[in-house]
Length: 279
Ligand SMILES: C[S@@+](CC[C@H](N)C(=O)[O-])C[C@H]1O[C@@H](n2cnc3c(N)ncnc32)[C@H](O)[C@@H]1O
Image (cartoon, rainbow, N blue to C red; front, top):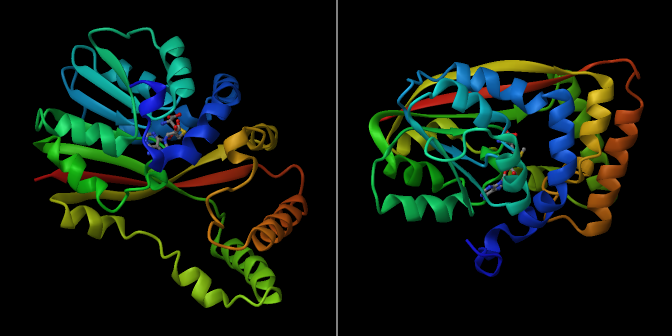
């Protein structure tokens, strides 16, 4: 796809990811964090050497590499909206050609284009991006439309808290800022209800066969470098909809809370792994 024809819906996220590509790639080369996150996901898939796989939001190719190692004779199509992330993915992949092709575009748009060829994939995989897609509610049905019956959709979702106690502290910090600014916390959170993925998948023709938790440890230094990647420098998505000054106050308070954590504590990133079979 040419630069001029990129869909508007992914505009902001696209700019952030284009600007993050170099830093993300350097971070991943050094720490292999997304590769470690993806290993559990790819390991849970009953891939065969001749499988056909669609990877959504391949980024710089950390998970793509894991897929290429398992799918020795099949075909992998890896999609991302960001030309810069894809450029790094191409550099990092040794099997571009018959076995692996990259496609630039928003996932919704690519799925609609692929649907014309119908039911071609045994697997659809997404490592560390599914919750970012603007069309997350309609996406499972579109994914189902490009999958063979009996094929598997696998993706993972992060939940960033060590414990329920830590989550409550986070909520308390955010609520404090909201109340100081005359915003009713309950109303704010009610608009941010998490997506019920199992229900969404069931309603879209899938049967959920696995819904499990796992964690990946992040060293202190690793987490500091992760935060320097522009896309993660601030949580630009989480407080959308709040007045700018309030969102900025919330971020400042959360940042101060983070600094108060003991320096030498390794972070644990928690993940939920969902695997669903297309019926
Ligand atoms: C955390 S990164 C990539 C993770 C990657 N799968 C890996 O294993 O390293 C998130 C990626 O999602 C992509 N992305 C976000 N929204 C997208 C969309 N609507 N369509 C296509 N790609 C998208 C971004 O461009 C970015 O490359």
